[in-house]
Amino acid sequence: MNPQIAEIVARIRGLEDDLERELTRQRETLAYHIENKRVIFEEAMTRHHRRLKVRVLRYLSQARPLSVITAPVIYSLIVPLVLLDLFVSLYQAVCFPAYGIAKVRRADYFAFDRVHLQYLNAIEKLNCAYCSYANGLLAYVGEIAGRTEQYWCPIKHSRRVLGVHSRYHTFIDFGDADAFRAESEALRETLRAQARAGD
Image (cartoon, rainbow, N blue to C red; front, side):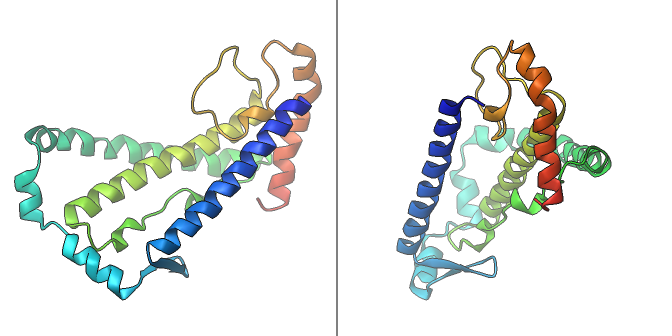
């Protein structure tokens, strides 16, 4: 990888670490902490949250009609999402061991912690669980696809694309045939080394 790009990627990762530290500080001001993967609010904050909860009937009566009408369309996506989940998980279970690629840990991509928020009613909690599943699944699938791409086709695109996975910046430049032939196996070996290390 180009040394300047490697330096920029390192700075980006450093900024992500800084962001996580700042978010941790912000959590402290919201009076909660995490124990054994469980969110625990201070009692005063829990009481405050309960006072802000909008009951289901009032929530439904205040909902925009278009939101109610389109809800079945949104929730119908659960079928293709679950199918995607099943097929990609099966793909990973069968192919990654054959290629020597470490499997992606599902637990790293799914968080269903919003059920602990006392200011959400049952419908809001269901909506949050649905969004958590959908976005967690897409991130999980993205990492599986990213590892697959690194193994089979680690070439950057000719133009800028949005939402690239974390591995993309280590890929070989578009049109650099010499580097592709020389460096592809090294990128595969990186994946194998991560698998051996248990990553």
